[in-house]
Length: 356
Image (cartoon, rainbow, N blue to C red; front, side):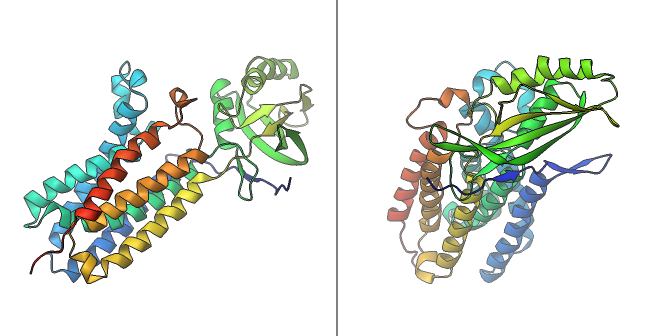
């Protein structure tokens, strides 16, 4: 079996400015909507819509996306948890957004926007706003890549990546800040099991001053780090400990290292980002065709077919987002995508050319 070297993806969630952490995901999220704003500005200018209505549209879309995506995750994926922790529904910064919830909320928001702000059919604005939603979805998936989340299943492919930052965060959380830094150094050796090739790593720890001795450091590793990586599986974490011998370096600060293997995964965030970018170009190009532009609902329908049809396909490569999806033929994301594709088929084939 041919095997291309995996990529170690060790990007943090943002830039620590001391008083504030600038989140990469937030920058990309905002960047997608800013770019969408300028695209809609060109569309409004082209079709003679007062530009002051654009700021209102942006407000509608952003609020609908955040609120809808959050509620979608809460009710579709983890209601069992949030029903007992209602206040955490408001903690969007902890993560947990679902694109299906965002899609439904944006549709509802556009119905309200068209009625209150425009003297046009809701399908008119939906046909145009989906162009910007597609490019925003591309930026959001790049943000997921920066966060090392929503990745693919374990595989050996040309683009596979080992996402190490989730491992670092879990170890630091488990050891309650007693480890100040963790580095993952890929070795030139590999471990083969079940026809998969796993890269090996020296995981190096630097302990805080609260760990005064080798004995204390050894106890911390044996009591917390080793059990965490011992029970790790490909569905649970991205790295598994294979070496039980711990090497120490006490020259300056207390340091130690263990050997672990990484789980190489398909970077489905990149695949999705590329897919949504292609969908954006398809919709933008079709918008320029007068016959398509005059058929209300066609671009909206195509958006639903392309985006959620692609979502059904890509989910077969992705790791399940919640444990309840294990063993299901279709996961939650795929099940929610099917009705949206059917709605898209209806609007695409039922769209009629407007009479002048």
